[in-house]
Image 1 (cartoon, helix red, strand yellow):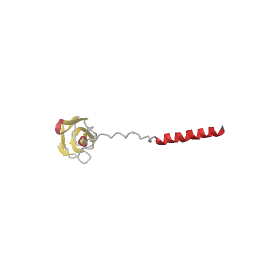
Image 2: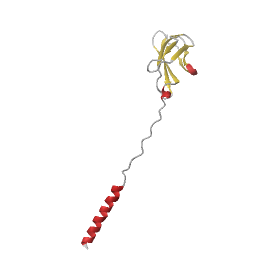
Image 3: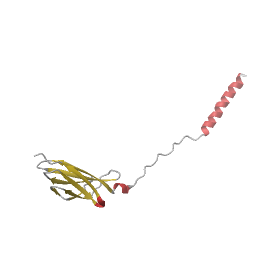
Image 4: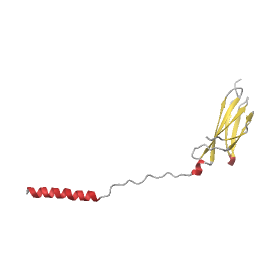
Length: 131
């Protein structure tokens, strides 16, 4: 009887080995591919406008033109204006990072604007300089 138990155990292990060996290995599903839309990186949708004071009532003005996916867009013409004071240059093209710069001179609290084609614009209000 000992022989038959041992034969039955070995036979069960061999049968199990054939069943496991016949199964295909698990293949996880492929990762999803993020949709890509190259045009989304080249169409201006927003302007981030900043102004920082320097000296003699001057403000360094930067307009960053961004696409829908947040990339800076080069070679976009930005028109600058100021309600009270002067700004020069009044137009500038964005650089490789999507930023155009200008300098405003004002002694009053005022609003500075940046505009690009398609009616996209941004404003920033500045306070009067301390004398």
